[in-house]
Length: 325
Image (cartoon, rainbow, N blue to C red; front, side, top):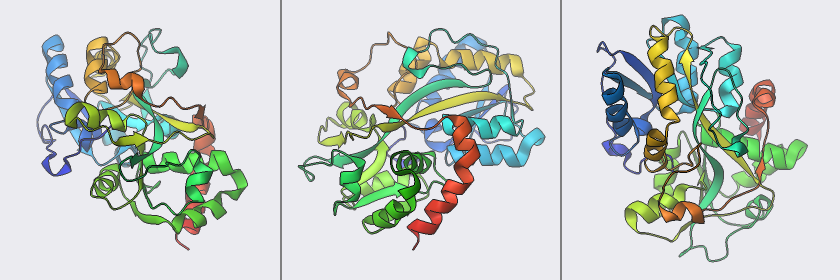
């Protein structure tokens, strides 16, 4: 689970009026009291003897949209929290600059080679269920959509998680996606703006499944000692989300921004992120809670960032048209 479960207690580490040395534009749960932001801030500031300011918006899509509006006037030195599906949009609009950081130590399965973006965590979009309520979970996306199970997912226009389901459906169903969206709408309790609203409704018992991550059960085991929440493993494979950070084109302190990006993929920062953002680390060799080795490991499917950039607007229109009928 990449987000905190206590949105009402979210606080922002600082307002945007301070004269911090480095300003990081990210999503709100990343800098919540239970998110990785406060611990990363403390650790990095001890190294750099500098001051970091986090500027929080709702979601990865919101990060990109804000930067697209502000462009050269942005106060942010770094964007942190868009995903790999959006990087070509950001790059294509000239919003970021090269990081010039060697990334040889990243996990091989990421196959990461990007001059502008650094990955800081990843996970697989998954439907999470309560095994005390759903005793025979769906084993494929097709089986879930053809069942009478209730689901909650997120709006692909405003949420990277919702966008992930859009890519998932498109990858599995191709030209039949519009029909699938219509079918899924019959069992959809609601489509939320962001991840938190969806997940909190699920925890209240409002649906059988919620769109989240294969890592979400780890949160419940480690912090609540609850093992009934599971991620369903689907035979078609799952779309991965790789969350990334980059230096903005307008950064006033690129050297310090580069240093922060390098810090993000250090073992210290990776341990903090994995156990506070509840996603998988991008490097090997960390000591993590045992539950991480028990998570489902789906086959990875999806699209390249270039394919997403070329088709995203059309796919969103297709979803909106079919899902709202």
